[in-house]
Amino acid sequence: MTPTPAGRQPGPVLAVALLAAGAVAWAAVPMSGARAGARLALVAAAWCAVASVARTATVIASERPGAARRRAGRYLSPDPGARLELRSVLTAAPWAQGLTVAVVVLEALHRPRPWHTVLLGVVMLGYLLALHLAESAAGPAALRPQLPLIIAGLGLAGLAGGAALLPATSAGAGWLSVTAALAAVIVAGLALPV
Amino acid sequence: MPVRWRLSRHARRLVTLALAGLFLAVITSRPEFAGIAAPAVLLLIPVRSRRPATVGVTLASGADQVIEGEQGVIAVRITGQGDVTAWVRLRPAAWITPGEATLGADGWFQLPFRAELWGTRQPGALEVILHDRWRLAEGRIVIDLPATSCYPAPARMDSLVVLSKLPIRLGEHAARAAGEGMEFAGVREFVPGDRQRRINWPATTRRGTLQLNTFAAERSQAVVVIADVSTDVGPAGSSSVDLAIRAAVGTTSAYLAARDRVGLISFGRQVRWIGPAPGRRQARRIMDLIMTSSDAGQQVDAMTRLPHAALPAGALVIVFSPLLSLRMVEALRELRERRLATVVVDVLCAEPSVNLGLRIRDRRAIELARRIWRMEQQAIRFSIRELGIPVVHWDGVQRLDEPLAPFTRRAMVNRS
Image (cartoon, rainbow over all chains, first blue to last red; front, side):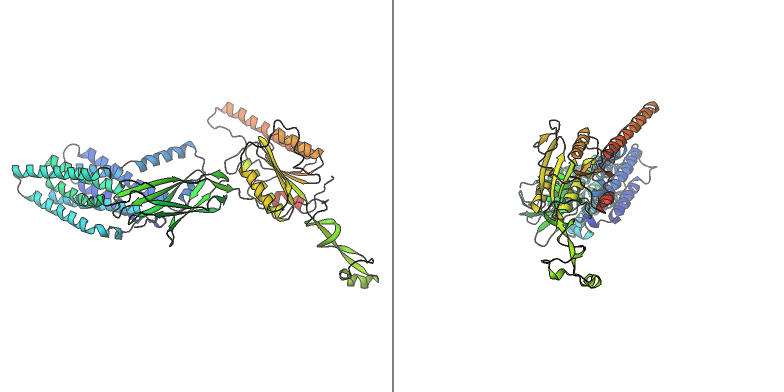
């Protein structure tokens, strides 16, 4: 997969924006039955979604041919200097991670609705993959090698959604907690410096 | 070179989704959140794939000399990366505009860049970015690039100022004296010993006696360019020094192309010079003098007169100066005393600015100071003109021919 920043189009940014907005809206509705703190999580999610889309658009615009030339050799008055500062903050902060956490927390603050949650997971995965494609200027074909893993992951998500519909017992709930904790340890191990 | 690998941004986002989902699954005992985490966990599995610890980076020479505003290319080859994707990028230094890298069929990356301002400087740092097949890990190598000499873009000058009295030295300028040149000068009566092939038969028929065509002699002249770099005013890129240097390079190139003997005096804190000489080697020496900022040369404060070796008698002197240095004005007076034909090209294109944050009374005082400054500048130019030295203004945008047009249309009279 070879990045070709010169050929970047606004399409991927649009996809990222739509998926981010869809994830926030899907996790938020209905707000009436949500627990306390849902409104705060919604605000955080909306803010992170906007910032994430703005960041992606900024990164793509800065890599457009001629963008560097427009920047070079300019004497900056205080106003554009502050704008550059804002831009550096916008591009440095992990807005996508913030959106991920805020959306999942917002969903957790609602009453249990397994299939709704699983679908939110699918939208979130789509958002992350679209963001990845937009940043790397690659086409959807770049995801082909990962297709088996994505399908397997979606299958597991479906199983989890189905498991949530089973009648809960106290023993089952404990087993689930231990399994999830073990999986968290595995993920943490994978995330250690490589 | 050793590669520092770390999780890519994509991988970090997947880790966040996985951890958030699993954490909430444990806290809330709701297995559907583990389902949210599942695809992210699976996509993170290949993060432990094999990656090279070192790669080879070869930089080809060829980008060490460029001309201001023109494109240079850095050629880079990455070896030993295996099945990892490699890409290169230029982290540009000031006044460097990077282009998009392209990978050639020969395996070399071509990384174009453009230097926007003359001078010797590093174009920046070369960044090699490596990605594994899944784009979950990202390796980076940053290499400082060697310094590049960016030569000033020469100001365009198509017509030359030529003196009325030229020294007896073979060249390309038509002199007033008759000689063996190509330019027709007139007709005179044939005297024994003249070449028969030069007989003008129509004139001979009209006058009844043998008439001969005469031609102008072709001579060269000595030209000395003085670049005043003692004061630098104006925005970078179009400051007085930038303009003076571009004009000096354009002028010396034009006269050297006309086979004249050309010299340069760099009039800064130190006065450095190269005596007039013809040829391509002289062009190289002049460029080297401009590009090097050594402390060699004579201190301008300790100097009483301009160097005689650099200013031969009968030379044409073209001065590019913002006329802000009194030393320069004294030097012009000295040139006049030596009876050298001199033209001053004023390259001052900036005025003292007024800070808008000041109080109105202060702003009025500054505006008054600026008016006094303008009048002082006008007085300096008037005094130079009164000495008999023409002063023209060049804005750095138009061709040098335009301000020098009054002197290029006919030969400039020199009295030496």
